[in-house]
Length: 222
Image 1 (tube, rainbow, N blue to C red):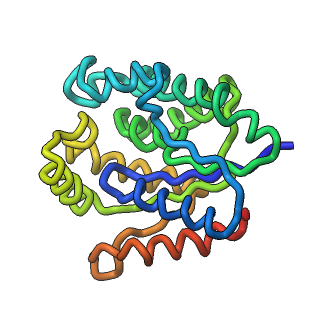
Image 2 (image 1 turned 90 degrees about the horizontal axis):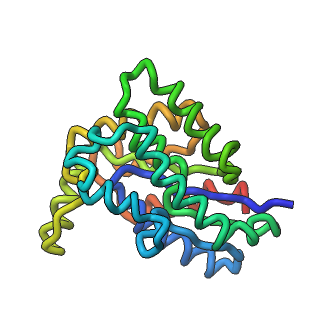
């Protein structure tokens, strides 16, 4: 017996964390039992290399660390989480909701390579995490698609409100744009459910509108 794994994915500034929190509350209100996980696990020792990477200790630009090396940093953190935190629940048939997953490596690392190598990298990545490491494959992935210019606006606003500076991913707008290009390709190749964060006129949709679309589409696996 195995459970189901539902993932919310999106580039930085897409509002993913907000939508994940809303989805968890809605699940609780509906009485649908689930186990909540968030990646990376910044408070755990298993995320040490992730924190060093994002903090610029291996270079100030994302491309300073090749996608295969960077992907292993995140994969190890997921492996530790699966072994220590949620693997038993999943194998017992429980539902798992995850804020980011292997899909984040796909979105954030693939674009470091020439476009003709993207599909080969994705094959390597999914084989590495799902087969070599033995992590579960998601049953459903929602990709929150926010245009890069709007995502950058939201990230800069957040930095101003919190008086903080983003990590090496968040401050690099060109990198964010490349991540979105990759994510749209991966969503098409892998069957992710794309949720547009803007309407036809380019205005950002309300949190409620986006949430209701996710909730409607998630019914197929509840």
